[in-house]
Image 1 (cartoon, rainbow, N blue to C red):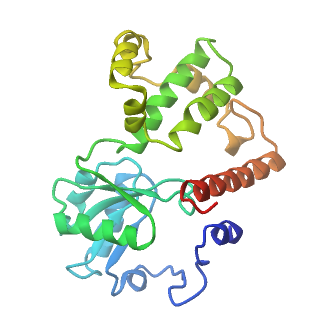
Image 2: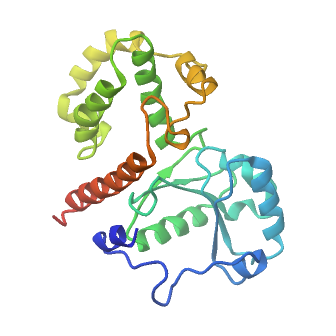
Length: 262
């Protein structure tokens, strides 16, 4: 991963004055901290236990940021004595490569807390995006899961094969979206064109509220994806390593181009 960091001009975490360290002593980990970022499993009870434990260990002005990918920040704030200092800070995977970070304001988050976390993210050379409302799943996952719901439905109805939908989305949608965002894309195409197409297409898009049978069947068969060696595709250990290296290489190359470095 140091090769990836080098390509992005990011110092290795074990080097310099701000070197990364590890400890299993929670009190030592948060002592004197201006910012504590919680990144424990996606379980509200587990997170609540961590907040209760650190509550008496941190200063009154310490900001507590959760990297939850979907638990409402407003719910998590109920487990900490100073909810005004709590904010969502959702990194996108792989976090050492993707520069966008969602900043989520809970109902009790103070404006100063939001601004402090945005400034901190900018100081890292990264891109904070502010969610003005604390909606389930936040924004990145809501958009992603709307896309996944539609593609799973198309595969399940045998409209298209998995490998072809991957090509279609990667090159037909992702290629453009990587360069220009969806709202700007509407402007480029024309609001009248968007209105015309959505007026007949929206009613035919998948709007199911449960999980698709295809997904449930795959899970029942133990086909969980890379972690089990088989999903919609088959994976060997060698292929998994190749895919992970290829993903990192391509994401770094795309980021460097978008940032104007290449």
